[in-house]
Image (cartoon, rainbow, N blue to C red):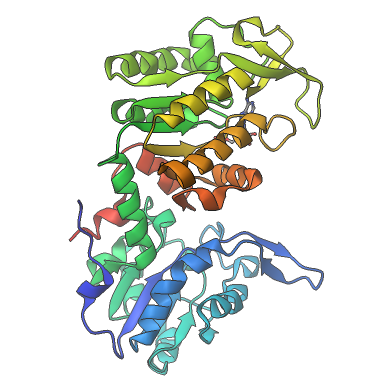
Length: 403
Ligand code: AMP
C-alpha cells in the first residue's frame, strides 16, 4: 500500500499557519437578488473535516482554491467571496475572506489571525503563474504559511503552483479527504478484490481510449456502453446508422478488443439497443437487435437484453468501477439502461458487499438521476483526475505527497 504524508506527519499544529488547497470550484447559480449561490456543496463538505480538525488543534487555517477559468485575469464573477458563507456553514466556524492570495496585505491579515480561525483567500487562478507552476509564484503562496495540506484530489492531475510547486517549499501532507480517496482508489484498481468489473460509457471513445486500454489489463469484466460502444460495434462490422461513431478510431477499438482477449478480460458490448430517428425528449424509439439498426436510425441507449447480461455479470463481481452513462441519460426514455444498471449496482453494494466506485461529472449526474448515488461505496467528485487515475497515470499532485 502506498504511504502518503498525512496531517499527523506535520507535527504540532498549535499556532501554525496552515495553507489548505481545497477545490471550492462548486456548481453555482444566480439567485433573484443577483447573488451567486452554491447549488451543490459536496466539495465544500469534503474539505470540512480537515479544516475543522486544524482549527480544533489551534492552527490558523488559510484556505486556497481556484474557481472556474479566469485565465490569469482578475474577474469578479469568479471571486471566491461568495464561498465564504457556505464554508462557514459547513465548518461551523467563522470564515473571513481577503481579496487576494499573495502579497503583503494578505500576510498582514494572516499574521493577525487568531489560532483556530479560518481565512479564505481569493481565486488562485487570477494569477497566470498558477497554472504555469511558476516557482516565484509558488514561493509567494508559500510565504502565507508554515505548512501545506492538499485536500483536493480533483486538482491532483495538474502540476500547478498550488498543487506541486508549493510542496517543494513547505512541509506538505494530504488532507483527510485526499487521503481517503487515494486509499479507496488504490484499493479498487491496484489491489482489488476480484472479480473486478469496469463500466465505461459516455459520448466519445476518443476521450477514453487510454482508460479502456489500461483497464483491459486490469479488470476481469469490461462493460462498454454509451455512444462510445458504437465505434466498437462498427469495428465488428455492425451498421450503426447515423449514431455517434468515431469511424477514424475503428482500428484502435479493434486493438483494444484484441488486447482484452489476450488479457482474459471479458468484454460486454450491446447485443440490443434503443434507436430513434431524432435526438430529443420522448422521440419515437424502438428496441432492436444490434444487427438490425437502419441507416437513418441512431443508437441512444443499450437495450433490455444487454441490461440483463450486464446485471448478471455484475452479480458475479466483487468490485465495480463506473465512469460514463450507458445511454443519452438526460433524455427520456434513453436513461432506462443507465438507471436499471445503477439500481442493480446500488442493490449489490448494499446487499451483496459489492465495492462500487464511480467518478466523473456526468456519471454522478446519472447516478443521482437514478437516485442511488448514496448507495455506492464511494463517489469521486473528481472529473479529469478520476479519468487520469483510471488511465493508470501517476498524478503529479499525488506524487509529491508520497512518504
Ligand atoms: P462523457 O462526458 O464522455 O461521460 O459523456 C456523457 C454524455 O454521453 C452524456 O451527455 C450522454 O448523453 C452522452 N451519451 C451517452 N450515450 C450516448 C449515445 N448513445 N449517443 C449519444 N450520446 C450519448
